[in-house]
Length: 202
Image 1 (cartoon, one colour):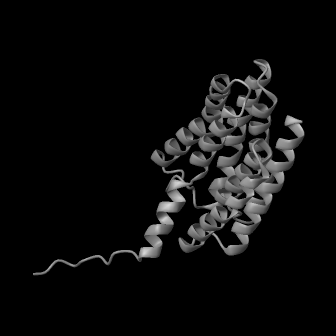
Image 2 (cartoon, rainbow, N blue to C red):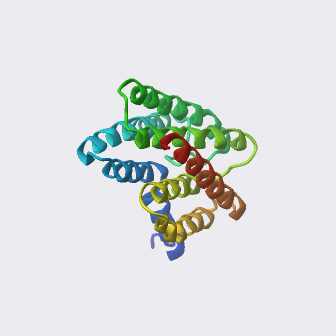
């Protein structure tokens, strides 16, 4: 009696999964925090501030997401159900807010503070939209990170914008978002993070 073989997923879906998982918001936040930290007058001190940003904006939220997965609150680390995201985003906002409080108390450099304030502002924009529409957090975070890197280093970073399109493709290919949701996420992330980062760091 022959065993029934499960067909392998299409190659494009495997690629989409690798992209979605590889550039998930947590990883993008880690990368942009380190990059902005290295741009400070004292790169070593900047990296220490980057670790603070990563703790409150990436590590603690991811720990809560994993806790929710164990409790059955959501099925995966991307929290695919829109209704569940409405419950998750305020918790992440509280964590990021605590990080901002620490930075204000310890007198963080303006750019490092601006980085985390921009993250909080982006979440504040995404939350009400998520109440009725599943806007893409992946593209919002990626485009927002690009805007902050362009402001920190050089507008030449906008040449990496096609990477945001690749992330959008991965979300659409996995049927987690529509094209409109990925475009809206990218626009919201770039506009909000770019404006807030420039304002706070000025």
